[in-house]
Image (tube, rainbow, N blue to C red):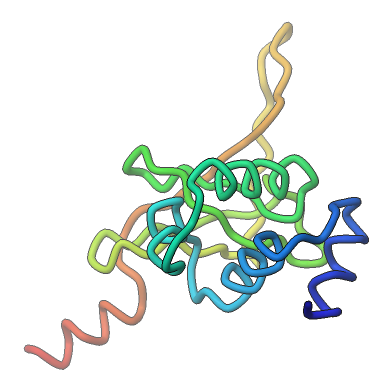
Amino acid sequence: MDSKYELLLAKKGIRPTAMRIIVLRELENAKNALNLNELEVLFDRVDHVTLYRTIKTFEEKQLIHGIIDGKDSVRYALCSKDCLYDSHVHFHCEKCERTLCLEKVPIPLVALPDGYTRSRLNYVICGVCPDCVQKKKKVQ
C-alpha cells in the first residue's frame, strides 16, 4: 500500500483499502474531474457497487467534491487542501468535454430570500477551454 494515500485517507477518517487507495491515486493524477464511467474504464475489473460506495464515502468526508457538469453528469475532483466543495467555480468545456476546478475563482456571494437555506452550491461555467481555443486557431 502507498503510505501517502493511507495518510490522506486517515486524516479524513477513512479506512484505507486497496480500492480506496487506487481510486484516490487516479483522481489525484487526473487532469480534470472524472465521472463514474470514466473511473470504471480506468480499472480492468471493478465492482461497480464498491466504486460507487468509495466515491460516496470520499464525498461525504469532503476528500472529493461532485460537480454537475452542465450535461446532467456528476464529475468528481479531489479537493485541494483548502478546498470547500462549493467554494470555487468550475468550468466545463463544450468542445473536449473536460470539467475543471477553477480554484482561484471564488463563487460570487448569492443572497437567498428569507426562509431559504443553502445546503450546497454548484457553479459551472460552460464554454471553450484555452486548449481547445488554441487548437481552433492552429486549424485556421
